[in-house]
Amino acid sequence: MIQGSLVALVTPMKPDGAIDETALRTLVEWHIAEGTDGIVAVGTTGESATLDEEEHCRVIRQVVEMVAGRIPVIAGTGANSTTEAIMLTRCAKDAGADACLLVTPYYNKPTQEGLYLHHKAIAEAVDIPQILYNVPGRTACDMLPETVARLAKVPNIVGIKEATGDLTRITRIRELCGPDFAIYSGDDATGCEAMLSGANGVISVTNNVAPRAMHELCIAALAGNRAEAERIDAGLRGLHKELFIEASPIPVKWALAEMGRMDTGIRLPLTWLSEAAREPLRRAMQQAGVL
Image 1 (cartoon, helix red, strand yellow):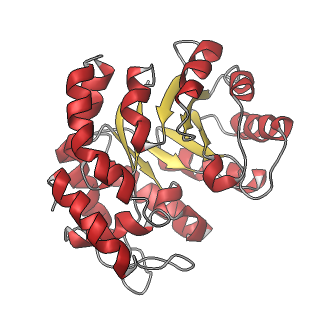
Image 2 (image 1 turned 90 degrees about the horizontal axis):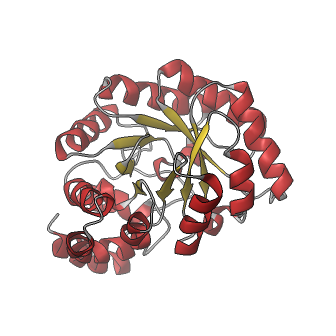
């Protein structure tokens, strides 16, 4: 089971929107050096919605090659078309990814039966470990714990990224799915408590800018050391909040540019962080010791 601090990695871009492969390699090496336990490549934080099919598969392949087996790579391969999700998942398997992360279909608003059949079809089509991703605040689609439990019976559906921020979901999914089903928090603000409540790690936006602290937080929380986990988390609370001051990944890309780790590229319809949002985020970065 993949555990710990997993970064929802941004896709660095040049000011014209072209993917910056040099910066991508630098970010990968930095995360490995800082103790990040796994990389999620081209998830929603990686602007999967604005990368075309060829770019999406190429970035997954590049990250796998750059990591070279040193830590797990989870490829974001979700889509609101089941056919497209199968195609992207095949790309990830062919590239050598360790697992795939599949966001619930956005905009379509499928029923719970539709969600079950969608994910079951992908799992049966591509033999690679698959992690469900529930983030109703972005998708307008909420996968209920009972549906997760049905899907947990599919052999290669191995876990879920639960990003509602509702801690009762963590305990409910654990009750329904048992100890061998991986549960990852997808909400940095409640990630510490989620791990103390039984989650196996965090797929984190904050990890993009504070990888060492997030790694140490996860070590403490997974060991049940509440005092140490809460101490580390206290220094990151400003980041947990301000990295969502505008739609992610707008703030985190700005923060990384401020740190000199990437250029100022982002793709429309997302825009660069507004002037009004910069000072609150800068203060949070200083509080966390990353600026």
